Image (cartoon, rainbow, N blue to C red; front, side, top):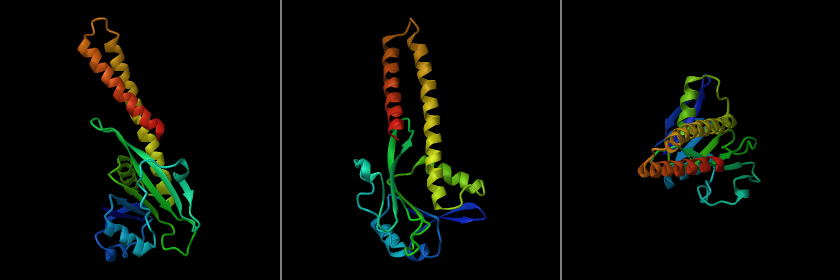
Length: 202
């Protein structure tokens, strides 16, 4: 899926793109590629002159590959964003590419984000930016606000974890706790430890 975001009257507007011709009609500050098809990657390359690295979404990346700048001025950032799903909590790798300074490239002033699945933090920022004029002024603001929203999302998740652990603790410390209850408590603690570990890695 390929979405572009433009600014109008201080608000962020989203358009889903279904052709190269449609892409050429917009001057976005943010281009979001969710599980992009080879065709969508080709449109981005043809219109913006931007080649998305094949390893952009690799799970195991060197520390030095998380943040680097190309000779042409493109800034590459890779980060994990939390999905607090009760059944399947996980982190989603997102690759960002931003060219702020090289005006010889058509990609100047556009943030590109590439990821394999929908990210709650992205939805949160889109909603806020539609409702709050002036929240975002340029592509760099989008990137910074995504990280800000992710920190807030992680903090809220940690609060929920601590509340749930407190509830579990009260049940466990009850002298009448059954083996079944203790087993459930142990499973809950393991789930919460896994989630807090993901947040620390973020």
